[in-house]
Image (cartoon, rainbow, N blue to C red; front, side, top):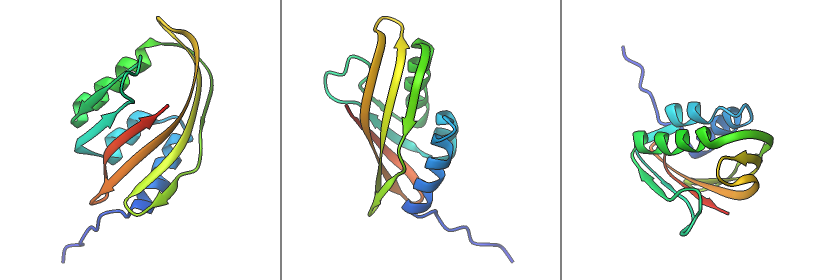
Length: 125
């Protein structure tokens, strides 16, 4: 007899996301919760990043950003707010970034979940 694995609900994905985010385990979030076809979107004209599609490209986008961080002074992620197949978190970063100096980013991070995996992350800052 084989067990049938059901996809996590959006609430369950959001709670697991939160558990890892509170530990600053962002690459674990990508490995565990992102779909292979995930899309990552920053605001138009962002001085930091733009658009990436596919798990490997989104991973590279994150790695490229992390490489530029020279110092982390404060990091905060709110509890998730779930609505339908989306959830959001507020994120605050006070960091020193190569080429930019010390910056503060206050953003809303929006995630879309389909079949138990994150298929879209979109940042508003």
